[in-house]
Length: 70
Image (cartoon, rainbow, N blue to C red; front, side):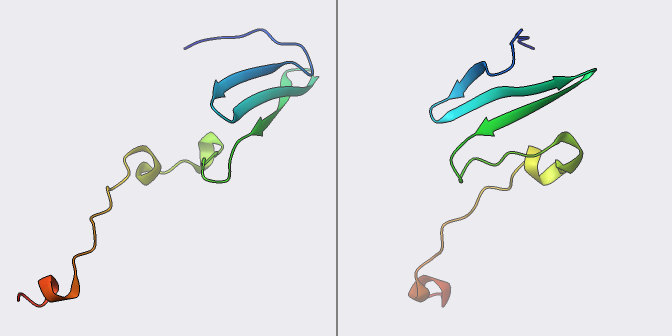
């Protein structure tokens, strides 16, 4: 695990177009903001499912004539 020390307002670059900003600190809680494109899924740990961790790859759709067995 990579651990950063940040002050309020400072940001961390994660990937192209993905930034994490420390918004506020209150006692032992920290508020963070995440800037990411819509396609990037961001979930809190308690909402992550097994499917999120091990996504089933999509299979390409077959042409209609191949589906009929022709």
